[in-house]
Image 1 (cartoon, rainbow, N blue to C red):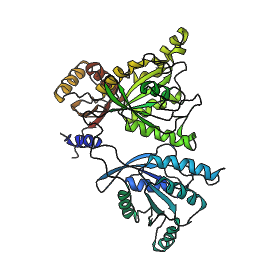
Image 2 (cartoon, one colour; image 1 turned 180 degrees about the vertical axis):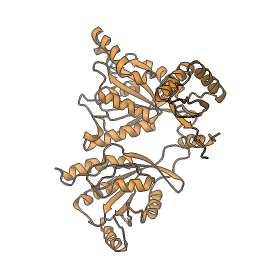
Image 3 (cartoon, rainbow, N blue to C red; image 1 turned 90 degrees about the vertical axis):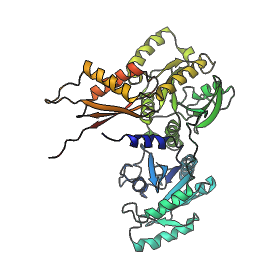
Image 4 (cartoon, rainbow, N blue to C red; image 1 turned 180 degrees about the horizontal axis):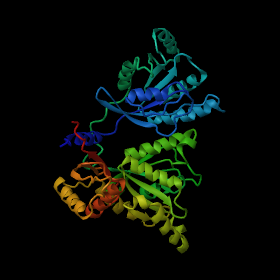
Length: 454
């Protein structure tokens, strides 16, 4: 039987507190994504010999010499864009404020450009530690060119070849020296405020909700969509407890179509979801559930966070809209039927007090653990009532199951063969019926038994 202690180690690592963040910045096509792949030790960032490819996936987990950190691949800046200096400053400043340290990548074969110097000004102003990587140094001859980058005034340039790995060890040592040590305290410590991310499209009323909860005009509220760019942490007393709310910039359309500060606002929203324990998705009840809303839901599920859905602006909902809203919810929110829903009007405070019970339910579901004995008894009964269908003369069986971790509840099924996706969904549905799991996604991992080679 596979030792499940590995899973517990992963769980413990997740509880060790937030990992420091390294932002990788630089012009297009200097090899940032290749270097990111080199740092994280796997080919995950999209690499193509064409400027501007990096747009969607931007955040990766990395580990060097036993220390974990997060790498953010920020995408390059188009040197031919109009208003170059202004756009570089706007984009770089927001990317840099996100990070604990910055890896500034320059193409050593080209040398210092005007774009590089514009970014350097922003980096200096930020006060963040900067590691300078002179990329594309594939041999001894190119190393001499790299030392010309001393003129940028950012200290020692580290000659590296992202493609071949040359010099990457020294650069990674410098990155660890620049990043803060991971704090020993855990976010999940007893008595620590639970972390809530307010997420949703621009102009659905997230800031109004935060102001209503805080009882003050803490956040700028304007009818112009997208007023909030930086997440704002707010400690709020509700229901005799203190909660930490993270107000986020509204996720606009696709990240790939966002530009400048919107690109980084989307990035920061994803980061806020990662920092949170439960995400409150704020929807405008007077409007239909949109593709953007569905994308945010997917982001929350992928992050494994608990979720509450708040239909805001309920004062604008008449009987006809209520009829259609119920049907839209049944159709569009079918994948997250487990998420508690509340109807509120943030502007007036109507029913905002329903948020705390919904959060409590979601967090309780998120941290629910089923004992191994109870889990296997339940699965034995389930399989007896509804066995897996026979496929090509074979019928996969569940041999044993365990729940190695919570937040989100994660189950590992040891099987005699791969279970159908439809049967896995059936197991999830029955788990919810039996044990609750309100407000939380459930992760099911399969471990099919390998056939012994004769």
